[in-house]
Amino acid sequence: MSYPTYNVLVRERTWALMQIEFYKTCDGSMPAQEFLDSLDRKMHAKMIMSIDLLAELGPMLRLPVSEPLGDGIFELRAISGSNITRVLYFFCVGNKACLTNGFIKKTQKTPQSEIKLAKKYREDYLRRCSND
Image (cartoon, rainbow, N blue to C red; front, side):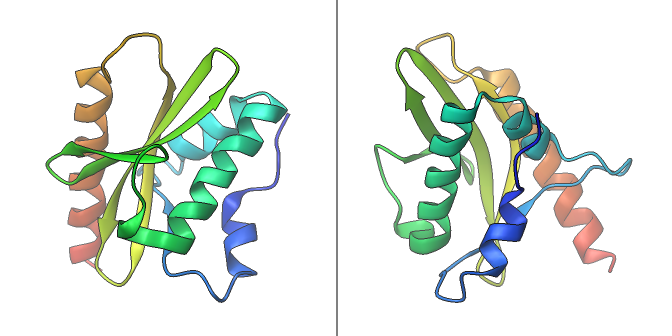
């Protein structure tokens, strides 16, 4: 089931410090948005609350909602019961945060493969933005 996208919600909030953007691949897919859409209703709502806090506080957002993973990649956190989800993001010029990919956390540490994917998406995003 698909819930309203965060892009629609953030446009209504003129007080937000940050503009939240979903990374879009060359083929038009949005991995973070697709991940959010795959979550159950309760977890989806919790992650939207974390995204809302990111929009409101930007780089001032800290644990337990956000944590830096290194090299400019951060994770947004949401917990519902024993389920733990993460959405990775980075900051852009112009008060923007770009959500790249998400996953359900099953191990103690964030998988390196997810961090590498976020970095790959960031490189692609920045390359395409510099060509505009």
